[in-house]
Length: 126
Image (cartoon, rainbow, N blue to C red):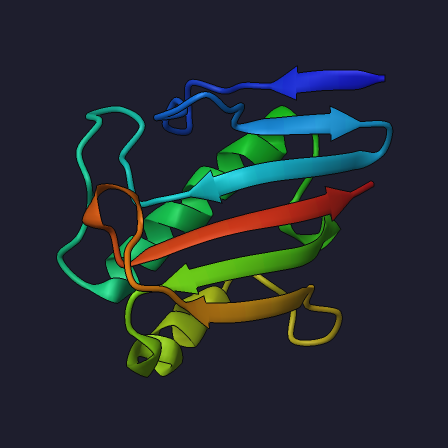
């Protein structure tokens, strides 16, 4: 069964897509950017702040689907500047266990929506 997941604790989609779709035990979370769900403002003072906001948005979606970070099996991270890899990892690693962290790729791209510096999508299974 296919279920649309939506929470007001994460930013609403900025295009024709859902925050997440749950099919059976698998959750597909759309790419999240550093939009504050309460104010609608972008948080872009530094890559650490952006990364925290993105992961907090993902956490809100996971909770709406009755899941947690430990249920994530795959993440895709898009960044505008690969040289920020270390700073992103410093924040990212605080959300995931050292052993059993999800599969991941981090890809540098030329542009991201609304001019942000990072976007993360993920797949979770529970």
